[in-house]
Image (cartoon, rainbow, N blue to C red; front, top):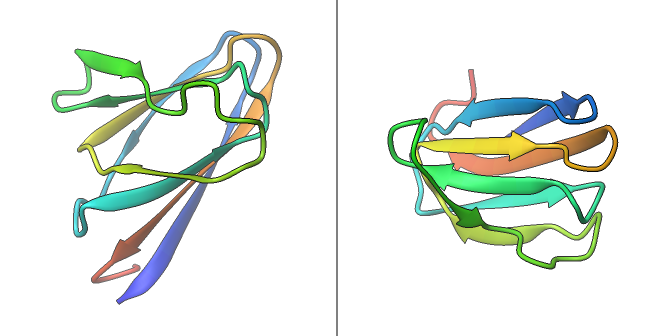
Length: 90
């Protein structure tokens, strides 16, 4: 087991979808801007509400692990980090 940390660079208004390894029930997500939204998705298309809510910027938050996370930079460019425990980090 190891940690897999993915860094996603988003331009203003850009959206990126992260595919989870799905090995464990929880992941940690950190966004540099409080306006950035992170939404969970089972199919990559239909999404939940913002998982970070009104979380302050740069504070990691533990959330339920979805198969996909849809990240969107709302007011300016942003960096999103997703950390999850994986059985095989390769």
